[in-house]
Image 1 (cartoon, rainbow, N blue to C red):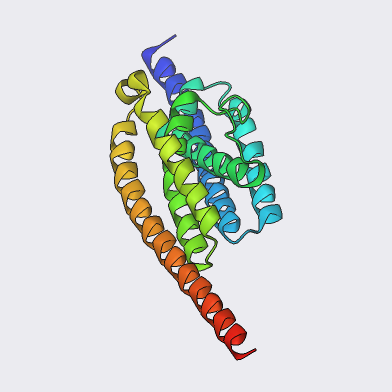
Image 2 (image 1 turned 180 degrees about the vertical axis):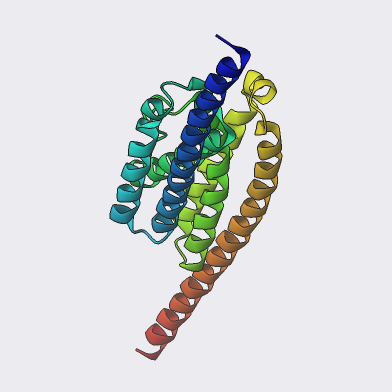
Length: 216
């Protein structure tokens, strides 16, 4: 076989790999978009729509192995990791809202690193939901969300190996700390305001009751 023939075969293989790479990137972008849309629906409490989007994303990720069967290295591209990360975030957030529990990485078939990074990003989604709860005067739900945020943050800090081995986790934890502090301040202010408001209402009721009793 001549050198020209060898290089021609290499060129063909590279062309095939590039075609698969583009297919994978397109699929992963769609998966990421579906996961983001699912989170959007969750914040609007449109859970059926969110579940449908997650099901579509899951099917795409399940087909990843078949798409990269002949070029396994493509399964570790940055766009793949990003898609898994966004999907993990959406699935974790969904399970917390709907079932009140943390879904594990093997339940949703997500690699460990994207799962951990997605978990860190859930803190931001919980803050966003908490602010909605505060605007709606759903104080108990806001407090519960704050507790969830604190739990996630504390547990992530305890993952010493992950903070070393999982790229970006340390930065995400730093961001999460600021998000948590801001949320704690917002919730504390609203809880105190609510308590003061209830105290004033209670005092007003007592004064009105005394006034009525004095007149009778």
